[in-house]
Image (cartoon, rainbow, N blue to C red; front, top):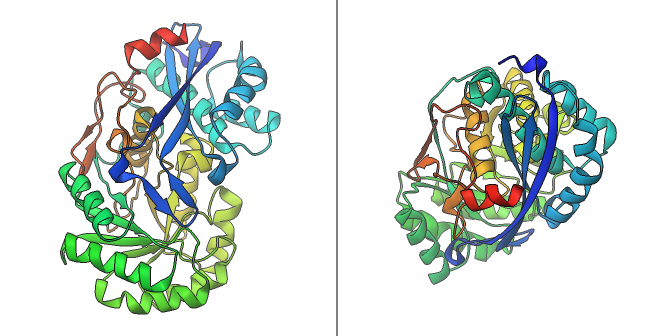
Length: 371
């Protein structure tokens, strides 16, 4: 089929709300993530091809959620796409930007559905449509939270799911953070990849104190140690300790350029949601790589469709961090998934399939809700 001759004929959404597995609930400096509201998106083309996406947004993090996403897609973005050519998808992404300021997670869910439909029309995996695939499998990690027995339960659940690489939530008081991370290192052993994620919760002084106290923990990296706007503080910490990962500091291209100019990070954590979709995420990663900054795929607690999109993007990137696994956790984090068949993931790696587009589809009961 010719995607240039295919047009968008329908856009539908289905809200989904799911709790996280209690033992794996993320408790970070920005708050807890025990429950998530999602909006699943379906795009239908004139050739009868269906593409799927997922809006994964939390108000505390992005100012968006499933309700706001549904409002904008149903009342503004979806109607504007009807009758327009599917290709080039980049032109449709630009249209979304002209219609709605901000709201990158909402746009990302819709853009993912458009890219999925485009790749399915070409009958290739999305990673191929995006310029890859450069790899067939991606190393992954999971977050650990809590103190003492609570952390031990989280670690046991993560290991039972197959995870061997971790990041520990911090950004609180120095003594508690040091004790938590040191316990995680004791549990994981000296060879495991172990990082700390402060979610911007430390001041520069507390960051320096915490990292001094954690010297014996042999951290693999420190993620967003200080406030997102404190790029000078991040640059200062880069010179003193483990590699610095910019997360909250980078949503889009303008943010990334600021980080580059400030020499504030060794690695940047790219989200499909923050970037605004798969195509934008690949472009953002290419910009980072051109300045010698490594890339990992970060997570906003995506479900199966979002995790499948993360995987496709990770495989489409010419370079991906060799030392820090990505956060493609998918159904490992929730009590249930939305996919007909889960991604091929054993906790250590997630593997790319051969199917077209995202290579996955929603469960049958959710497909019926689209109708």
